Image 1 (cartoon, rainbow, N blue to C red):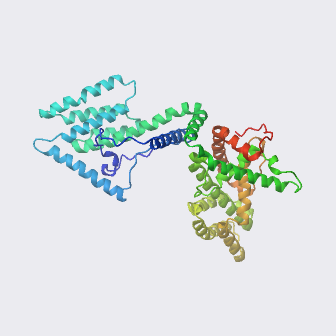
Image 2: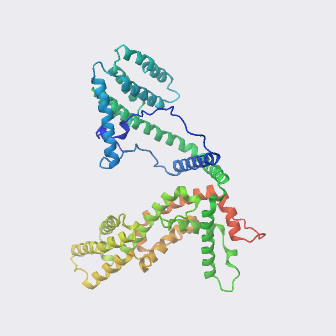
Image 3: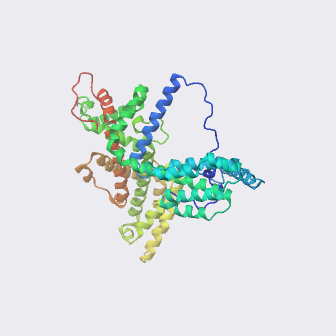
Length: 485
């Protein structure tokens, strides 16, 4: 979590207390269909949050802060300044008007109470005693309210409750003497402390959720299916496509006189092929299986990393083919070249037009580095014909049907498929020269992909099994003993 304590308080939307009424009148009772829809939405939200806590070890929340140069940021800044200026006018009046100040103290008390743990019995009692709102109102009526004393107690309490990362910010509060500035920064730091508490709760929940994660997600997903029986339509279409693709591959490998190829298809092979289709999926595809929706952002990110590695390995292969091992064997050359490729291609591989433009410039950049490497060895530059060839080969990599890119892509997919199969199959994959140069990144990608797939199969295996039986076998046909999980 980034520390934003050095920013001006006006930049923070969290310095604004909530002054809305909590007892606002409610509308008409929801209809049965609306009630069911809300219940379904809550079920999906709970499932998504639990899944995110389980699979995303880096999950943490940060206070939302609009950019100061955006319209939202400017409006927020104007509203906040107006609010605090109004409070300043009230406190500077004669006699001081504490109406809004008392409301703020009540909100501060509520926020502090939300940070207390069950064991904070004495602290809770002390908080009720010092921030006794009835007593504070009596002091206001008699003109004896000591706002500085209350602010000092609040900052001391915050110091005893905050995480170590907030110590410096709480100490800075004690240096503030002007009441409005102090209150504004108290709200800002309290919002940060609430975020810290949320993240602490997530970390505390994760070990307990992990113990029951698979069963919990199955139960929650079944609840969704009970309310929406057609929720697996896209999953069925996804598996159906994988079955057809696997059968086609087997049919191509068999004699044309072989029996119906679907009888040779295994559930494990179908699921592996289905997952491979996800990592090659178009990010804009709306027909995404429901059972993989919670991991879509992760799979899309892996897909982008995969494409980057394929293009990077392709550039390395082409460069090595034109320059030879003499240049690639130079100490530090490959590392520097990889850094250059990654920097030039960063972000461009997600858009075809962007990739095309980036590769046009990359060819020239690669040639400059090759020229420098050859010069350091006292060798002549590449002939112009080979320079033009390398430049053209690199620029042509933007095409999906490019021979080199296709070859590298097939090798990478073979590695990932073997990763899903596990065991000795993974070790049997021989990485070509350029893929060995990116083997660390490729292995990390394969591990992350395998982890997502393993958890997904563990959770949704019972939902996949009946779908696969329908797709792969005729009614009454003997079912294999193979588990879809």
